[in-house]
Length: 210
Figure: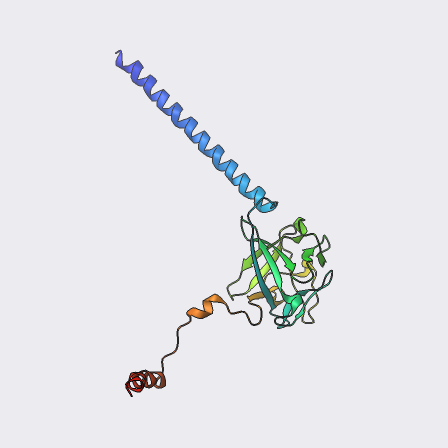
């Protein structure tokens, strides 16, 4: 009879330990989730940034996004100085800031959905989230105004964010290297082997012997 109380106490203590461990794990996961959401919503200057330089090819105009200062359009030439973009990627998620290398102005979207260039890109209005589409294009949605995308009409003029959707071609862009700059991946492309190249390979050793 004396074994029953001790066994009962042991079981109670065991379940109590399991309960506290479960509470601690839930609290830590909740804190980490809050930490991630807080940093993706409000990226700060202490976060590690990755900086890249490339162009944004517009699907509608067939030209490139260029930042002239306060004015932004999608009529830039390939390799044009105003079409070179400095893209700062935050540590968490796909939050980016886009700055003109020449003008040093950031692409921002105000509360009316208007695309403007600003010299200070630290505000949330100047942060966009990359969305990778199935057709190899990329869409950029405002981090502050959900569902509002960066887009340009056929004349290269900015569209209001409130009039955009992800399916519109006006919001589809493709990242491209500046003119004259070779993508490192291009060096690893396979060479197509034809009858002519096979014949040249067979004749090459013979030519060295002669």
